[in-house]
Length: 114
Length: 115
Image (cartoon, rainbow over all chains, first blue to last red; front, top):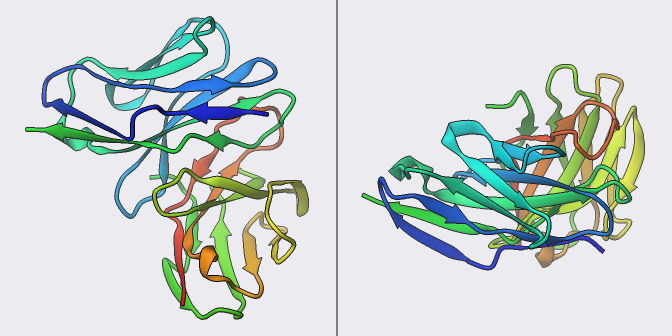
């Protein structure tokens, strides 16, 4: 069965510092990995996805993520955090055998402190 | 913002009642998926509709049902509401069932409170 873990409930970082939000996954086939962000009282906004190819994926708002097959990880990163990046971040996975539907992690709350 | 809209934004019901939530998909999208997001948790897949037929279902009881209309909008119906049904209900649209690489675009959600 597919599963996604986000080992940190909360990540705090100072504005201007680099940020990392961690994600590890378990799938039976090749993984298709996604990151979404959720602002208060809003739906999920798509940030980026890994399908195949380059292990470093660039997405919206300056975010990027690094796919590591040996460590089954897909960590979200940003070189310089903004206060406006404060939100709830979800990692999600699909695999070919499972079809269209996402399995989401529990979420990580990112707080960027001014 | 995506072009996915949901109504209503908030809803309060009592146990045992029935509720209908609505979703309009983004222009050009013909697939709608529904998710339940309980407080403090990640979204959980309920079911998906493609071309007016159910195309996959998560671990939810039959009292959760849905419809998709010819214009690809969709409804989620929940019968015999329970307190644990209190959650944010998210609709997501995408194009076709071309594969798991397809991005889903989410609406703002409907927050349901069951008393």
